[in-house]
Image (cartoon, rainbow, N blue to C red):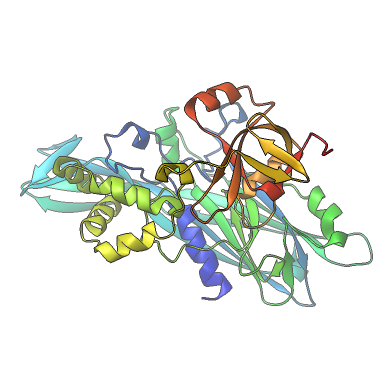
Length: 418
C-alpha cells in the first residue's frame, strides 16, 4: 500500500467516524445527534457561541524542491435526506413486501482534486457540489425520495518561506464553506448545507513534509508557530518526514493505519472492533430488523456479524489485552520510577510519549496527576491509572472508574528518591 492509499484508508475511517453508532438504528437516542467531527456549517448557521464553524485551517512544514507541485484532495460527506413517500404523503416508516423503510439522513461521498504548483501560490480556488432529487419506487405506491442541497466553498492555499539558514516553508490551507442557505435554525437542517467530516490529503511530487509531533530541532520554533483550527496534520507512511499528509479533524499520531484484524466499518473506532461485534451479536431479531431498515451501511454491519466465522472473531480477540485482575490474580500495587515507588495516591507529572500513543495526550504534558492504581496486562506490562489534579471532574471519574493510562516512562514522580 503506497502512502496515498494509506491516507485514503485512514481518511475513510475519519469520514465515517460517528456516522451511525451501536445499536445502529434511527430510534436510538445517540443516533439522533449525528456528525460531530469535521463539520463545516453554512455561514448562516455557524457561530463560535454554539461551537459550530464554517471554516478550518491547517498549517504544516514542507521542505520543497524547485518546481514542486502540491496535490490537494478534499474529501467530505454531503448529507442526503431519504424521505419515505407512501399513500400520497411523507411518512416516518412504511413496510412493503415485508421490508421496512425509514426516513433517515444518508451520506454521499464527495472528493475534489486541486493541483497547485508552489510557484503559483497564494491561490484561492472556489468549488461547488450540485444538489438534486431522486425518486426510487419500492412498490405498492411507496417510494423513497432522496434530496441533497447544493454546496459551495473555497480552498485557500499560501506558502511562506521560513526564516533562518535551513530553508523550508510553511504551507497554510484554509477551507471555507460559503454555501448561501436559509435554515430553520436547527442543527439537523443546517447539516444539509454543511461539509461533513471534511478533511484534506496533501501530497507533493518532490520534497517532503515534516512531522509536527517530532520535528527536527531546527524546525521546532516554526512548528510551535503553526496554527491549527479543526484540522490536524498527520504524516502518512513515516513518523519523521513524508510526501503525504492527512489533515484530519480527529487528532492522530503520525503514520496511523487501519488494524489488519478489522473486518469492516463499525463507525466507532477500530480499536474496539471486538466489543462492538459482540454487542451486535446480542441484538434481537427485532433490533436487527430496525437497523437494516435504518441504513444500508447498518444492514451491512448486521449481515457481516451474522455471517462472521469463529476464526475471524478469534482474530479480534487475539489483539485485546486484559487486566490481570480479571483473571483473579493479584494486581501489582507499585511500580518503581526513577528510584521512587509509585502507588495509589502518589503525585506525578505527566511526560507523554509523542509516538505510538494517543496523540491527544500531548496536551497533558507537564500537568500533575494523582495515581489511582497500578495495573498490569497479561504480558506483564505495567500501566499507571491517573486523574488530573486540575480536573474538576476528577472525583466523578474516580466514582465511575474512568482514568487516563500511562506507561511508567511517561510519568515523573514528584517525590524525590532518597
